[in-house]
Image (cartoon, rainbow, N blue to C red; front, side, top):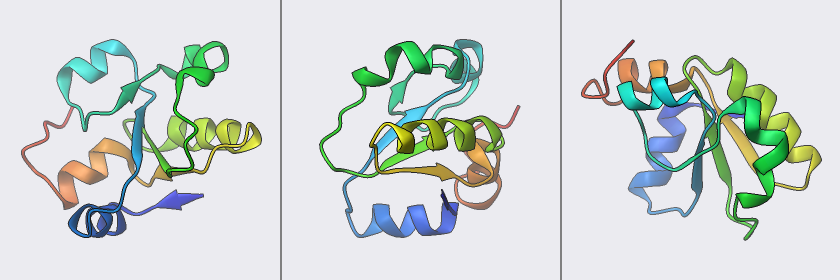
Length: 103
């Protein structure tokens, strides 16, 4: 259900295709971002069909990994190949890319 930041960076290095989905609030996204599609968790139920369902894995992230885990469960129920980024953007910043601001 989750992918560790260290495994995701290996995917990036191997040019494995995937989509990113940020489920944080807009104000959080303005502070720091890994990119990707942005649909806040509170809007996901109404907007999830905007997410490409082209069989690429969907990596869902938030601040610490709690909201993204909930979103991943919801998306899997609706047929998406989804994984939550363990530890969220916080763990990514502390273990992979310290240039991503912490908040």
